[in-house]
Image 1 (tube, rainbow, N blue to C red):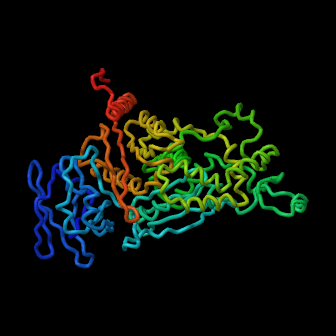
Image 2: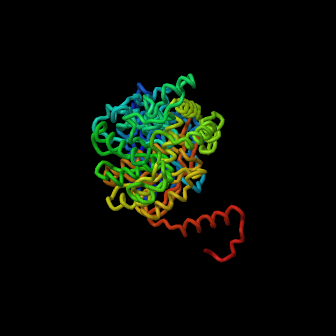
Image 3: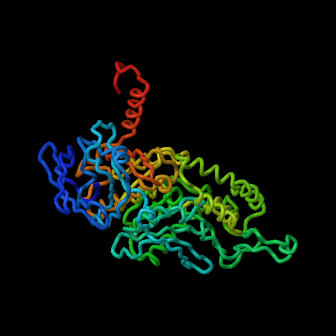
Length: 528
């Protein structure tokens, strides 16, 4: 037989359920579940074509006892473990099938310190689980400004639109795992910022003179000339340019308010955009968002101070900047440097980053890449800081969700916790092990949490947030182990949710308590 779990609407009295018996009649299988208050009978219809059970509204795998989840090990021991298309179950966003006659009997009765939740893996086409097709497109934003983006799920008419913004040095390709998975349920876009990914210029913004070109014989690098092309006279790859780009993209291409998701630099842009255009945003999700960007003062915000800096990212590059760029670019565009950076930002080194490495390397080989990098590095700050953007979003009641990889060596979780302190109502998830790019490292967890958060908002709160059973309070902290299958092997991550009563002191106290438990510090010492 096959056992199916699915998540959708709340499952009343889900705590303390035990599978007492299984009775098969014709093409129906009846599961008798018992709890502390009453027995429940769940009917599962056998699908002869798929050879699986369909259990309507069996929420969050209601086979657990006092917050004990069905162990992935027990299911794996009983037989194979695979995904089921959630649409077959009837709109649920979390569905699994486990094969084997012994599954029910082998459910572990062992108490777990941290409850476990089985979540979907990524679409497995080898098992008949189709992923959403992804299209590569170009949008002519302005003359000579061709913006690349990818999209999926255009057939999901009426579903919420979701826009993904990439981090520095990458592009829409970094969200392939989101587009292929979430594109089955939503309309999804991923955008390349101008000056990055495949949104680099198609012409030289500062071409060299013919005399210099003849002397050098080759013109392999753009932007190092002495005069600016007319179309690039005001071009600076800045946070304000990207905010304008996102604004026009949503209005002209998507055509309605979106859920916007950003990683690293993309997180800053997402928050900044939401602060400036709350009417175009349904909610913001920050994935290890960088809390600052730009070194030079903004000319609108601090005009007198900005005049002290003779160059702020415009073309052409000054002579000194050209030399510095050549030295720095030679170093950071080296394949060994790229590989080392990826090694730093991914906590799980078994993660396949070959595609990401290849796409980053391809971008560095574009003739406009070096000058674009210089413009980005010397561009002024935005008119709003990260903190100001955050406070403005809160004033405008923009929903905020935080997902931070705990092992990020650059944007450590403390930055996310500071956001949580300023916006206590924000949903905060800390994922471990995960580094700077949790969406690519543990996409199963990020996709599961993002789906659930969007469903919670779209339902007006009638669907609980991910990790929660029924309508448990979201004021207190909790932790869950999310288990899934990747390429036939079981994996898991721990996710901690910080409630609205989160405080830095409670965080420190919890950390000290952990040290006491792990290192056996004398328990008779005064309690904190």
